[in-house]
Length: 394
View 1 (cartoon, helix red, strand yellow):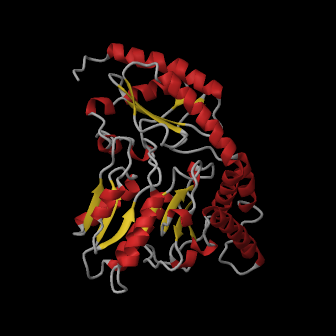
View 2 (cartoon, rainbow, N blue to C red):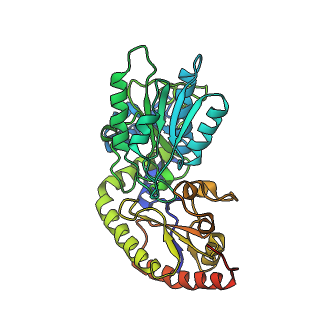
């Protein structure tokens, strides 16, 4: 039996998504920028996908920008604000210490350029403090960027409270003052949480297709109407002049279909992954010296993150892979890094525990039989590695 428990890294394309895409590789291959019927046929498909996504987000269709994925979307949002307002003044940005690298690395670069960046602490379950955020805001703060749900430990942030705070600060600023924007990376939230831009109160929101059973290489940047930022790329007038380049019509059609399926099947899928997670949690709790990172009741319903003393995470991953089971030691975008996870460090996990960390992320295609098989294989692997490991004094 092959078991795939790494859905936070990527998901399989849903067969119905693939079926929706296929005609746009062949007989409906037109360029959306062409004015003839071939082009307009493709444009109509893109418009329908844009409307489906906008309705899901409770947004206007003109606020939905198609990109290659969340990394590009995050960069457009952050650099777009920076380039628009940093021409003659020093700006201040606020983010958290547990953001995705496509956010953190941008802010590190902005800091090197001489601007101020506050990296908010998180508590032991991975949540920021609204009070600390409030105290961090200055007259020079132009952007707050905090992810909706963390990709490693599954911590869900109080994004609606952040949105309310931003609204309050904006109301207190004069017309001559800098604007204040709120960006949230909603990549991991899309499948199982409510993602309503009006309730969140964000100005920018990003997500990727490959996390929601759509193809890789397509994503969305939501930009609230009336918010103006500079484009990072020069070219045509595609995507309301913000993201030039010929549209990836098949992938966009697939993304629209995937969002449609989320809306139709969310309750069933949510119930399923919650049940599987409970069974996983019960089985993993039987292992001695297992530390669960993040609070299960408040984290993403499909994700478990566990640290195992004296059992190295990469070794667990490789031994599971030999048995046909796929998990992760953390974010796929950070794999290969030798340092302890920045997320685990931020939530206070001792270094001797960080190296034995495993992320298990479930999806709608997983089954109870797979959970049973995983636990059957996982427990002896941990025991074997501990027998080989040197003694560790805590």
